[in-house]
Length: 187
Image 1: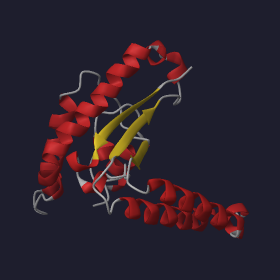
Image 2: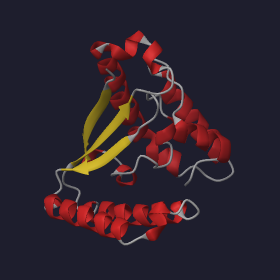
Image 3: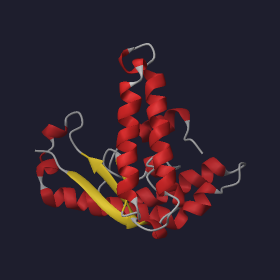
Image 4: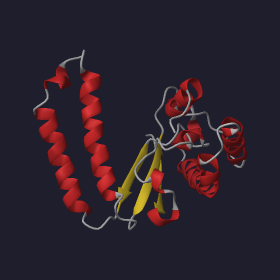
């Protein structure tokens, strides 16, 4: 059995860039097991109506889109699907009420060979570490985001390195973090 870890943070306590967006600048670089793989707004007034609309919009898009089965156009299909989800997320972001659920998962390559990942206490430590990493980064996020172009990469690297050092358990970057290292993060 593999375990996942989730934390809830009040929307009003974190940067708006993070509301439902685990690809926000810098998040993929934090010391979180496998990187953040789940990020969703919850508890927003009227969310049940938006959830129903999202479900219907995605179903309609899938049923009426021949690209979903055309491997040559599958990327176009996923871009369209992503736009529907972004519109939903933007609608939820109109309210600062509610919270954001951040999560990570296990069950990556060779995770079955790591007995720690089957230990609920270890997963709880990873989960608490994810919360700590998010809160530390929250406190430095404006500095990270607004670093001047001439020193942006140095400032950002220093901020992330200092936050990563605070973690008791050192984790490798997840896929998004590795891609950011290879091709550079989106701003």
